[in-house]
Length: 498
Image (cartoon, rainbow, N blue to C red; front, side):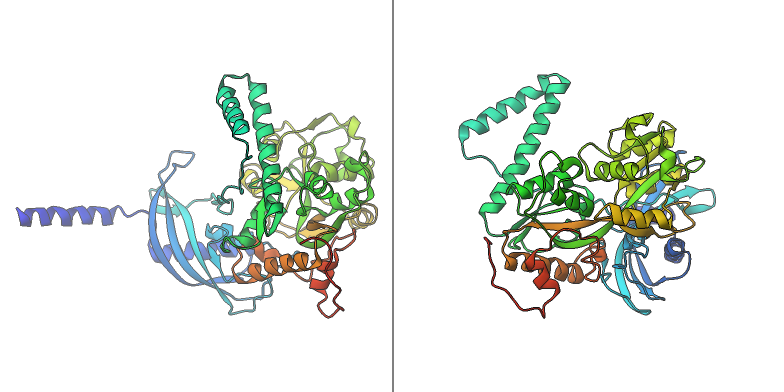
């Protein structure tokens, strides 16, 4: 029996070897190199070594073809200089996308200039489809940067009765009408965010109001701080977004937060959505973290060439109360476009807006978001879309009239079908602190963010640039930040509460 069993085992292994999923290591290496070259349009990163780590079944292709995902470890080498923290260069997120890597799956690609021969490492993956000619690299790109960031810090009220009443309400919510369930969900979510912020204020450390979980600010801060010990004094807390963060900081419900630079400028001067409440005099700038270009997206066959061509069209302006909506309204007003005269204003989320644009139900989508905007990458891969930019005169006028926005180009090849750079304007993701936060606390927070971005931050954190830290700032700068970025300046005694 033993020889028979051994023979069966050998045959089984042979069958497995013959059915191995995916290409051989040489083909895999060539495909990875081709994807890297396609990102930049020229050789910039070469595969020094690559080790295949195995494969696993993947969902079938749209046409039903069998697909598999192949995992690998690679050492990569720059053949030309590259600086991921240069805001005018292609984002390092595009490198991660080409490699099918997570934000934390690339090592050694920190902020600053990387010279030719500099190396970094990656845990990557590619999707392959089975054809009559063998395994072929699939066109789809895994959006691996949207990793699970973990739950926001949580807390509960101390009164048992309130907890029991809340539990009872939640248990009853499935029986409630749709509108009632939505109200219950929104109010519980809002209450939890406020509880988190209050609890963080009562303990040692700095809670950074970061916007919605999974959003750009949240993902960036997680990229910088992930991997730090739990005792780290900086904590990322979910909130509703830029506009909400301004109110949270001004009202002392948060001490530090991230918001669009133009939203911060409007809050300090009491303009736009802040006109009813008046100027927020306690907001202070700490640092611009990364750029958020204005994306005006239309179908490739659209006759829209300039922002003023949006008059009378169907346009998505960003979610109500969002920083994108605030910026879009001000840009349209400056361009002489009457928002009341638009054929339709879509209020849905960004993903829904892009889907409607692709389906021909909208004429344009305006969103303020860091590039590459992953949702746009996915839609543009299936439907030809293009970006509408500003000419030099328009960009210069916007910078003068709309404080907090700066001229910036979205490099060519950032999106499918984009063959040339697009001149636009950008807000910056601005780290803001309340004026009475101690100078030492703000300086220490900045020191931690910049140090971890350089030493162990993810791909998104590589955009953090000390050289651009003051870009787009038009509100008063916190003295702690001034001290951090100008270490030779005379030190002043710290004031306020830590």
